[in-house]
Amino acid sequence: MTQPARPALKTFQVAVPVADLLDRPGGTRSRQLLYGEAVQPLAEADGHILVRRVADGYRGAMRPEDLSQPVEPTHQVITLATHLYAAPDFKAPDVASLSFGARLTLTGTEGSFGQTHEGLYVPMVHVAKAHLRFSDPAGIAELFLGTPYLWGGNSRLGLDCSGLVQAACLACGLSCPGDSGEQARTAGQAVAETEPLQRNDLLFWKGHVALAVSDDRLIHANAHHMSVVYEPAEEAVRRIAAQGDGPVTARRRLAAAD
Image (cartoon, rainbow, N blue to C red):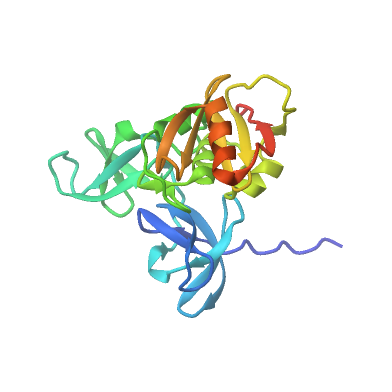
């Protein structure tokens, strides 16, 4: 006997440039979500909506005013940041700033601008089709060089070590959790410590992750520099051990998306 199809779970999407995903209603930030991202509502509690992030399954509480009814994204922001304008003119008032990876629904174009479903305008040179996938996670991470460190951050305004790695992976179509502990278990493939370091290798410490850009250089968001920086791999290993955070605990290798 054929079983009836289950109804699709309802979704909302993020309606603000950057929204906090809280560990509990009224609690502290666990991660952040970007404009246009999809979430599944699970319940309501204390004036918040408990949600599951579609991209990685991360759960938390969000403010209802940060969410709206879903509209299928057509484009994504592919530059480090862009602006939404009130009119298709770079001299028009800017209404909001969006980060790399934000999702947009464009209904048409006017000159060099795309019009969003909300009637705002974005430079077309800053967006690409929503299905586009990049091929080099380290290259995406390098876009964020100099971005301030922010615990739980996921945007150009600020991000942390796992947020940087997740942004790089998701842009390349690679599955990646939001926390470094889960990334150490599931991101890419495990690599022996004796193998030479390669671009797109992940190095893990207890509570921290960095991404290799070459055989001797890392990029990571870290609280020591309070920003996304390059750091020689050997120097980072020594510094992190010296500050009491121990040795490298795991290494994994990211692959380019198909």
